[in-house]
Structures are given as C-alpha cells and as structure tokens.
Length: 409
Ligand code: IZC
Ligand code: ZN
Image (cartoon, rainbow, N blue to C red; front, side, top):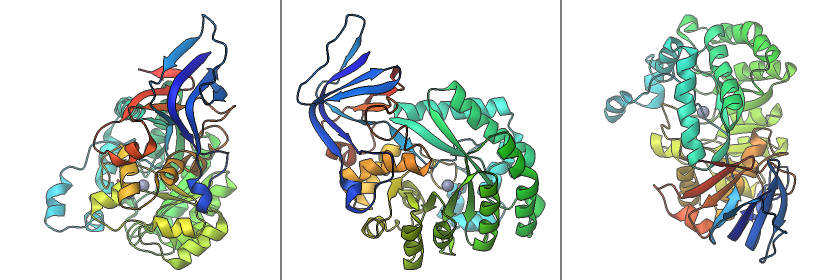
C-alpha cells in the first residue's frame, strides 16, 4: 500500500460524469485527510485524522498539511509537432492576424511542413519531453491531436507517436484524429475533395489500426465550414470515432450548433459562440472545452464561461498547447485565467481541469476524481488550499505527482 497522509485539505469533484450548473462548483472537501492506494488504484479515502493500519512494507508520504487534488487532465493539446512558430512574432507585431498568416501559407501549414520533415523517432523524442514537463506540472492525463501531417503517411505517423507516448511514458494519452485541421497545399481551394480524401483514404485506416478515439475538425472561416465538418464527423462516427469540434475560435460559423446536433462529446474554444450555439450545446449535453491561454496569446476575447455554466453546459478548461496560438503547456496558467478572465470560482475550475476534462476525452469512469476504485492519479500541491493554486501564477505550485500509484520523479 502507498499511503498519503497529513493532507491539510483534500478537494475533488465526485462522480463519473461531467458536472454542470451549480453542481460544477460542488467539490468534496475533506480536512486532515489521507488516501490509501493499492495496485495503482485508490483503495480508501480518510478524513479528520483517521488512518488505516500501516504495515512495515507500506510506503508513506507525508503531504505536510498541503492541498491534494486529482491529477490534472489536459483535454485539448496539439503536442506532437515539428519546429516552432516563433518567427511569426514580427508578422503579428506588424498587424497580421492568426488567419492572415494561415491564408498566406504559414501558421498551421508551416508546422505541417516541419512535421512532415521529421522522422517518427525524432517526433517521439520531442513530444516525450513535453509529456515529462506536463507531468511535472501536475497533468496526469492528456489528449493529443494529429493535424500537422494532413496526408495519409504523416497523419498516421503522428497518431503512432500518440500511441507510443501512451505506452512508453507514465502519462495516459488519449488520441484524436484531426486530419481536418487545415487544407493541405495538395488540396488548395478544394476543401470538399480533401474531406472526401480523409473520409475514404485516411479515416478507415485510423479506425482499423485503432489509432484514435476521437475525430476533430477545425470548423472555422476559411478552413472547414459546418457542412464539411458535419460530413466528416458523421462518417467518423460510423467508424466508431467520437466527435470533437474546434468551434467558434475566431468566427461563429455554426460549429457549436453542429456539436449539439450531432452529439459531439465536446466543442472546443468557443470564443465567439452565440446564444444559438449555447442552446444547441446545452440540449445536446456537449462539454465546452475552453482554452483561455489561447485567448490570452491571440489577444482575443475570452469564451463566455459564466453564461455557459448558467445555461447548464459543463465547462472544462485545457491548455491548447500548440506551436502557433498557445506555445505553453502550463495548465496551471489556464487555471489562473479561469479565475481572472472567466471569473470562475476555484471549485468550478477544479472540476473543469479534472472530472469535466476527463469526461471530454472519455475517461470519466477511471480518472478525474479521488474516489475509491478510480486510478490513483493525484497532485500534492505546494499550497494549502485551492484559492492559492488559482491565485499565484507564473510558478509551478506542484510538489509531488502520483500517477497510477507511482511517484513521478
Ligand atoms: O497550430 O495553430 N487553432 N489550431 C486551431 C491551432 C489553433 C493550432 C495551430
Ligand atoms: Zn486546438
């Protein structure tokens, strides 16, 4: 047994499904707590100084009165990529927008060029270093999208890297096929043909080789419209891939509405989402995966998180780590922005980066809360309470990370 004792405060959402409305703020809060872990799973949770009988062979960790939460879940990243995009800074300072750069053949397409050039092993080693950094920052489960290959060979290359990251690092990596991330140079001006190519040539193989659980699409002005997105996602559902949509990041062109209509598990970004989109999401039980560090980095508005919570949409928060619109993998910074920019309460934020994020990637049954039977993924913070985690920013407040009952060094 591994025992974590002397936990000043243990905070966790409860359950296996996403929490919305007032329930999003309901955390279990235990004082002077302890957690017993056996075989990588949570065996028991204690409060008010209660402890199990400890055998000489047990390992005991003293949390020294600090806060303990579930391991964080980062439910939206693009962490497998070649190159960086630091050279875009001067263009942006001269006034070019994210979409201007993409339309001129840069942006995502620049990363596609660099990702295609990289060998699978190099790509794996680069991504593995990000995974290590994420673990050190308290993230124990991550979603990773393809979308920088944009052809059969290179999309599969990225997805195989996801598989290896999941198998060869302590991190749980949930793989998403985002072949419809941009229109590749081979299909310039022919988005419909590219959607057909993905549906007929790439998707069946992704499904056959079980390289992704989700299919995602960048539903955006001058990328893929709502009809093209619908076509691909419905085709993917037939192959057993659940739906996610990059919706309303820059323009509201119907992505959030589509998410509700086709039963997407999550819609992501939602900076420009309108009333109609929110209504459809609430009706369809779609989780809103919000990415505040991207709003920060693009100098854009922030998604209407409070309005979503009021309308009963479960809110998750993720990093959106990618080389263009968010070159930071620090989910703790997104937590800070959840508080400062979204005006969410610490309890709502904790649910957003644990249970709701887990549900957004199909892992609500196994992770996202500290409960008997769930996987033993926990963070011991260098902080006495959740307010401190939301309040201090720019430093790593994680003290110890436990993944499947093992201490991450
Ligand atoms: O590489 O720019 N928004 N996709 C959609 C991204 C941002 C990632 C990128
Ligand atoms: Zn994204």
